[in-house]
Length: 550
Image (cartoon, rainbow, N blue to C red):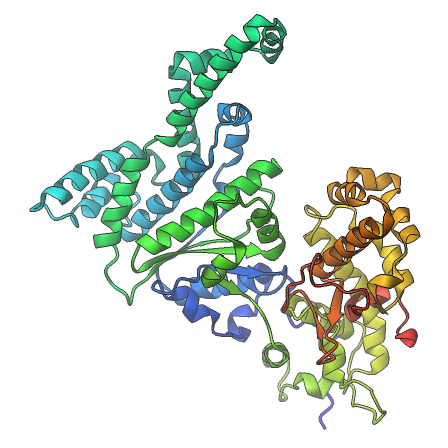
């Protein structure tokens, strides 16, 4: 076999797709691109863990298709909402969901019009082209033409070039409408201390409550009626006549929703939720145009936790989701493609495959194949595999093969980095997760719920730091003492560990270990006292769990 010489520090790629210079040449498509680019296919929501390849899919869409625009949440100036009077009226109980949906619909529709009639420097001409598709010979379309013309003349000129201006201008307009109502305006100007003082005066309390109810209803009507009918006419006109070529789809992609574009967490979740409902509706109404959203699974989990009883259940969204999943064979192909790219640019000899570089298997009973050793120490994501191998290559040079010692040496830093990545990924949902790690270390690589004692739970729940963590406070409230309370808290804790990817559950029938990536787990109904859980091999080094005892 040839002796492959890799310079120290040679990498097979970047951990972030946006910084990965070789991605275009090494991309592995699992069939997702065709589904996403097909406007007649309902799937628009790319779901995946951090590092699973969502951004890579969007990059390939932008490279392969002519009409693709990416909206960056950080450039939309949604923070403007945080400081507007809308936040005040929301505190009164006014439901702003309709307005948020309108805002997203407006942003997406104006972006589609801009793509379809694409002279951003000549707005009147572009809008004139847009209006030509409306048949002047029918009464229905004549009415639609006038409404569309009025709407676009009102909003197109100032919003055509700068997306962030759209958000500011619309928000300012609805604020103006609210302030033009005498009662609403007076309440907005009223200092909270004055309201509290009035409310304390017995008889006046009933009058105040009556006035406030009336004001809330008026504010709700102003927000709910804001330009929605006009925009719906434009959507209908576009749907019927705007995008007529199935071979030329127009795509809007929205990524980076996990970035800090909205500091107010409650408003952030409301906006993401409204975005998903808006995109689902628009995609249904528009032929040959499609809006695609990439979302981390932890954010999806949080959004659907807020679902009201009248909204579609999570499983009813399955037809619009593309869950990014990788098989062992696809991950190996991804590495082989990257090795070929590295060698094409750096060396003249033929490129090795992953199998060529991994240690030869020693013929010992029960010993893993080298490729399985690597893959089992990942969450089946490209980022994990790239990180592990980059660390191996960074400490080795002029090798013919990696040794098992090389893998184990690289695994120390890799395991710590992956554990920290999980903490970062789920920090908004499970702040304080690290407080539970000593218990995982104590339990070892495999355990059953019955191995967790009441003392173990109390050590976590009574930690002073736990009082700053909402989910741990919830567990404390769930704890009532006695067998039932202990079991509920224990199962809830295990459910969180499973959800975030720290542990898997062993199937007693097939002896296969399942993780949250491939099987959901209901902590209230699916756990038995003798269910066996396995700590992910990727994390054992960082948790201080010795493989010798596994």
